[in-house]
Image (cartoon, rainbow, N blue to C red):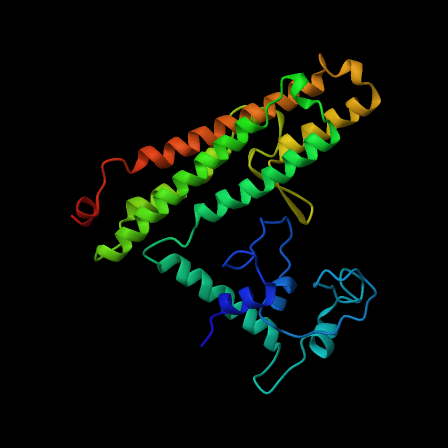
Length: 274
């Protein structure tokens, strides 16, 4: 019997041997998640074929409970609002399993791979739009190297956690606390005063999500100045801000890698089992 994730993997045809999981967005809509469950609906619209659609009445004055009960989620032999009840049960089940699991189902290795993929794309964009970026004292390879170190540390940590899970009678909560502590290293002290978005690794823009939000935002400003007047770029505030954001990301990644490396130094399967 295939699991939900097996079906997800088959339907999405992922390049890697696991489901495609995008970064978090700013919206809370559950319709895309319903599609992943294979719940059918008819959306008669002419839109780009991105695989996901909104109902014609979505976010209109006609988006009312009567339309839901009659058209988008009509009653079935199981009772009233079957789709909503299914989604509710699924969400509650996930919450309960997440709360009760001995080992938190969080993969920092997946996170590091997503960051690596995104940064490589960003490097291509930067070198394409400003080919002589290195002449302004910018070296994007430094961040790339730190992401690769983060990925290596993530792999080492998950390998160790997997070994512990196989060999110990109970999974130690200490390793869970290491996982929970990862996200705090995504916050740069320099962002606390000048921006409402404290996280330098992941952010949202409306319903979209973005990695390295401050770096990309500052590069956008730098690119505008570069296109307008290249001679002003070298000593510009825009270039300074871009370098500052790169430095913030670099520091966060270094702290995160050190956190993963140092937090379980000296631990063994035997010591954790005691």
